[in-house]
Length: 517
Picture 1: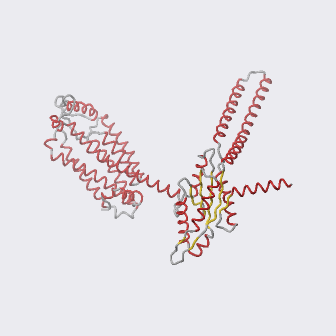
Picture 2 (picture 1 turned 90 degrees about the vertical axis):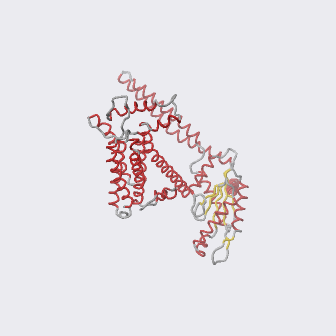
Picture 3 (picture 1 turned 30 degrees about the vertical axis):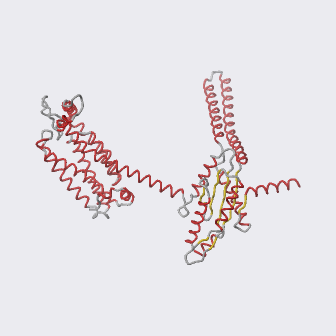
């Protein structure tokens, strides 16, 4: 047999959904159907064993042929479960057996719903739950067609009795006070309601006591209600369990996907894209009096390490440096692998002197860390770092410039709209004076133009109020830190250079040149 009940565990069910072949999944669905049909067969056995007690509730003449049909279904699905291995590599045969299985099961469930008394509980669980379970395991096209066919069959069963056809039903009424020797589908609900009312008459004060429990146990209404629960409840619990497990699998898969998407697999640091996203969010969340520092770190002579020691050792170096950064920095720092041997460190609410102190300590920690390689002597590496701090004053200046640009960009379309409105008024006035007639459309056009101008002004004000920093602000800060990093390389590597000091020196130089000129 291709599958067993042990495959219902969480981890193995995950393999079923994502790793198993189509034949194994189809065999698993056949196993589920086999379990359900077997439970129905046991119900027939139970009624037959206690036929003296329940014979008045069940149409025994119809029970026996139905029992034979259920037995044949049990044998068929048992054979189908064991049939999966021979057709594992034959896709055409596999799809054929999937279609046959879905068709037979849909017809079987329709017959069960019909002969068991038209229970909405059994019908709902079988129609919806069975279809969703089938879509997990076999070809969805077949399940969808079977679902639509099942709905059509329900409508057919509902309409056929109105044309004089009598549908079979295992349920027999036990009402002796009324002349109801026979009943049809058309009077099924009414008859059931009368039977339930008579069964409820055994209660004292509308409650169930131990004295009346045995009487209730032998009533037709209680027997058929428990039958419907037996037919539907275990299946409903199983389907809910399956989908609960599926949701857990999807949650874990989503977490793994996010982990792979947001983190670098080698260093376990944040990826470049995710690091930039968090950097932008941190910039937007800054307070008015907070500075924002960026450190760009690059390992010195890293290509020589790959050439001399191999890429495996190079990967080891990157991993160990990443671990050093994570151990040295606080949880507020945003550390990401920016490039091959480049690391981006974002320090929200960090002044420049503090950022420089952190960068110097990182340089020392990396330089003092011995790299151990197999069959080779230990060696050391160094790193160059560029530091830039966006002060709160500089950020305020950038925001002001950005808002001014946004206002200017919005002002031009507004001016064009107003000019169009003015031209429309002139044209309407000229047309009115030429033809000497009233132009009511001109007034409505003027009103619409004024509304458009007002709307654009409101939208411009809203967009400007939301404007905080340019969308490329992160790249601007990194570009400035990168210039300081290249300066550190030019100074002989294993250095920390401040971009703020470089900018200040350039301004002083320009000021001196301007003064001397």
